[in-house]
Amino acid sequence: MWDKLSSLVVKYYVKNKLILFYIIRDLKKELIVIWNLFFHDLS
Image 1 (tube, rainbow, N blue to C red):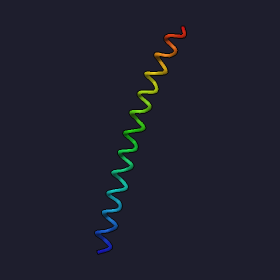
Image 2 (cartoon, rainbow, N blue to C red):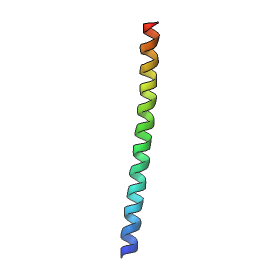
Image 3 (cartoon, helix red, strand yellow):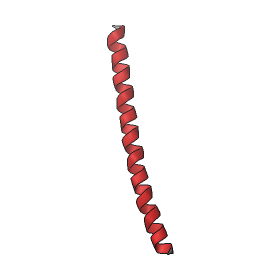
Image 4 (cartoon, rainbow, N blue to C red):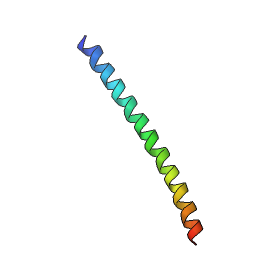
């Protein structure tokens, strides 16, 4: 019982970590694009 529960928790946790990782990665890409556009307009 506990083994199943703990493995579920671990799976859930890992999945959330991955989702967070991808969200942050995409945000960084967006920020870089915005940053580049902004600086391109400035120069």
